[in-house]
Image (cartoon, rainbow, N blue to C red):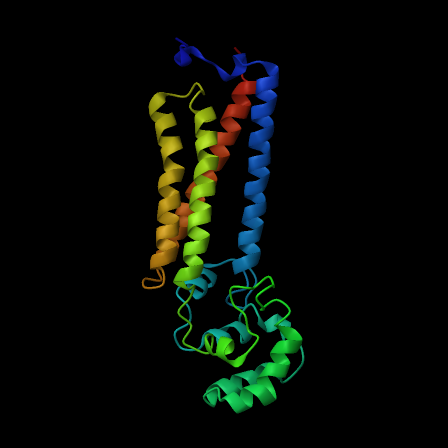
Amino acid sequence: MIDFSSLKLSQLPVATRVVLSSAMVILGIGYLVAMVNLYLTYSLTDGEPGLTVGDLKRAFYGRRDTTRLAAKIHGGSMEQFLPKPGEKEKILSWIQDGAPRGGYEEIVQPILMQNCVRCHNPEGLQRFRPLTNYEEVMTVVEIDRGEPVGLWARVAHTHIQSIGLIFLALGLVFSFTSLREKWKIAVVTLPFLALLVDFGCRYLAKYYPNLVYLMMVSGASLGFSFAVMILVPLYEMWMKRQ
């Protein structure tokens, strides 16, 4: 029987260490790219540069004093795609008038077709929110209550499974470091708990907006775990003296 308790990362064959190190470095780069994507996705939600608590509240709780479309084009992330003077105001006036079908066909549809439909169509980047006809637009001329449950479910199930597998792989390598057992248990457990808290708060923030603070803490915990579970094994494989 193999005695894994005496196994040291620095004693692994060079080829094995190269494979493990390369995989961890690639995962680390992927995590950094994911952070950039997160920033670009939510940093302009409230219309101001930088990722803040306000962005997260606006994204997940919504803005209950306006409609989803109005919130996006007036101080939101979609305002930049209506560069011509008067276009945004025409859509806002149409919404305030009760969003009639006649006004949509005469005023709103040409603006959306020119500026928005290239992404907001069943084949576009924003396929989950098409704006190609009156019925589809009416789904966003409602009170902005944040991220819909369907979108949360699609993001949650893929991210929980994929990130869970990533931390499984990193945790297995980290478990062979020379740290005390209690510290290893704490580090490998933290990201799984943080992942559940993060997506749990992301769902519940629709009802309790201040949960975005706990969401930010869980996200920071994930980042901390990721860094520790990569840097410590790399140090022990290549730099730690015997």
